[in-house]
Image (tube, rainbow, N blue to C red; front, top):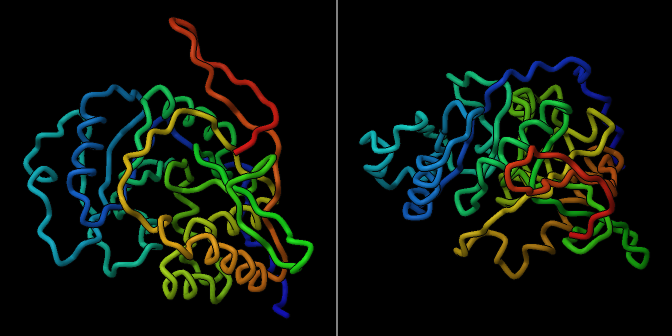
Length: 278
C-alpha cells in the first residue's frame, strides 16, 4: 500500500487573479475544427480575454496558415510547440503567459463569451479551485470495492479540463516532482489518458475542497476523439484506482451544489445553487 502523500506546501488563501484570462487550446491534426473555434472568438466580444494560445501538437504537419497570417486580429493568437506529443503537455504554461487565470479549452467545444465571462467571475471568487463547465463523478463499487468513473450521478467530483478555468500555479505545480506524486505523470504518458483526472486529484488533495461546476451552455462539434474509444470508461476506472493508490487515499470530494448561468435578456448574470444530475 502506498504511503499517503503529504499535503503540498501551497497556501491557497491568497491567489491573485487579475482582471484578464488567457485561453489555451490543445490541437492535433484537426485544422478545420481549430479554425472554426478561432473564427468564433474573432467574431465575439469577451472583455476579459487577453490572448489565445494554440498548443500545436502535430510535429509532423506544417503549422496552418490561418495561425500565422494575422486573420484573427481581435485577440492575439500565439503558437505553442510542445517538446513531445503527450496529453499532459496541455498543462505546460507558456513562457510568456501574462495572466494568472487560464481557460483550458478543447478545440471541439464552443462556449459563448457570456458564459466565459461568468465562469471567470466564479473563478475569481475561488481561484485556488477548478471552475469548469463539464462535470463528472466517481463512486465506490460495493461489489468490487474499487472506484468507478461515471457521467451519471447525483452531484459531481471531477471538473473536466476541456472547458475549465485554472490558476497558472496549477500548471506549474502539475510538473513539480515535489508536489505531484511519483508515478502519476508516468501513468498518463503511458496510457495517453486521464491527465484531467490527475489535475483534479492534485487540486483536491492540496485544497481539501471540491471544485466548482458552472452550468453553462457547451456546444460540441462532433468529431472522433479519445473518449469515443471502447475502453475509455474502463481506463478511467483504472486511473481512479491507480491515482488513489499513489496518493494513499481518495482525495476527490463529491459535491451536490453547482453554479448555474441564468439567461435573461437585458439583465445581469446571477447564480442559482442546487442539486445537479450530469
